[in-house]
Length: 434
Image (tube, rainbow, N blue to C red; front, top):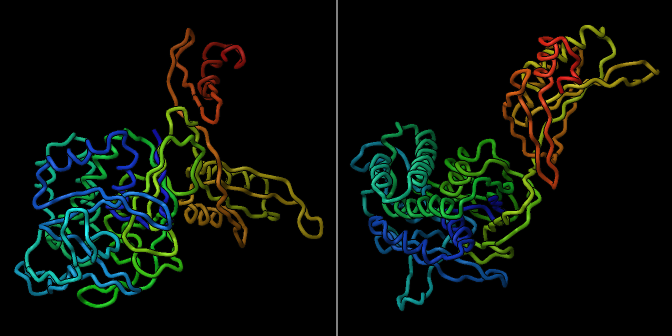
């Protein structure tokens, strides 16, 4: 099963949880399971929410009776982090206000006949350390995969906090309400992914918002430092929406589960979930989750880097050496095209295809092995078939067979190197081996 997450309004733990919750055939089973876990001081409710005329779900999580909040103006205040960590009992200087989730404004009445006005300060000095959170997760009565995923997400969070604040990971200390709130979001999302049975998760580029967020020690730029670290190598963008749209919890969950960021690959959608934030904005404040139907095509899309340069002062042997060197370095493909340059000089167009994350590496190699003074590049998208490889025994010996499928087609092809090896060993032509 495939899952596509649309993060046009960022990502937060409770928004992701609510979007996935709407995809379940029996969503109440998820709430019953979460409530049975015995997470300390946690209560969880799924509430209907309407944004820009669209109905979705807001997942309300309270920790010790308090819901994580954030102001709705252009410079949100993280009130849960008003105490000063420089002087608390653990004696280390850092600020953990960023384990919260997205913007909340909960001065309203719920169906539970009580009114919440959470725009107040939490002044208690205690919280939860990273090792304490790990012990809580490991003790939960959940499948091994869910426990493993939750531990991995919290490790990403703790590593980011450790790097931002310059402390050992064991010293990372999360404020109590934020830690418990994020714990419920993380465990909930990991459990939902397991319940949905999805194995292929992709997402859009992530909208992070713009402006500043106010924390205990002043104004921090959006995305907040921990969020920015967690989003390294992930396509992000800012925009006209003021405030923090992507939180550390949301960023850590995306990093753990999403294998590709970009446009949605072709798929037949079986169900769509809307996970709502609480701010009312001009744009629908939600994460959308698209769940594929079982018969969706198995193909996918991704982006590659295409690097090019024109060569008119190298010998054929030198160009061939350069092409071989870049192929050996792991290029997806290297190919040569005869062209005519200015003054009708014959030349070679040298083209390299590689992974986008390897663009700088292959740019350096092109300068190293060719005489060019400049490298042009672009990042085209491509549709790709799903590829697998298996070894088959034949009367002549073992042969690797590559299978590709998707977009309504399926193909098999024997590995040429194996065909050539068997042809030499048996004294016959490659076509006969094939």
